Length: 218
Image (cartoon, rainbow, N blue to C red; front, top):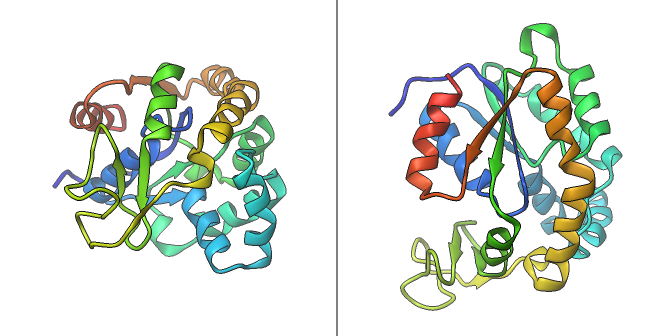
């Protein structure tokens, strides 16, 4: 177990770069809150809430959910007790307006300390996404080639069936990558100008990336 960190981080990178997997691991090891807008949105969709119904149409098409559906949810989550000391934002911000809204809603005492960019070539991202499978019960993430289960389409952890997310299908991935290039990539320049950006080569074994992340976030 690593010592608790007091960092307040944003993990940036293309879809499939490993942000969510590493965020969960770092948060558990370092006593941080993992705040995943994707997980929160999928929970809303599963419960068929009004927000979930609106978001589902965008997610199924591989498009970004509009800012006004995301910002209030993130603000409320950061204010919860487990996120007071340290947190990792995974999947937010994805646009410049979101980044500016986040800055405006953080106090100086709890402003961002790190923005870490997960650098992975697009052809690698495409392969990671098309092969990704998620457990329908426990949420564990597998890959048909890089991290397969012992029995095809059955989770090793809980025995439930695996599913392919609608936004991991080839027709949606192209749109996700295009929107990432046009909307999310400009955040690199924004955070670089604020002296917050740090880059990590995420096209390496997960254990190597994890250990380097812990050092970057000190």
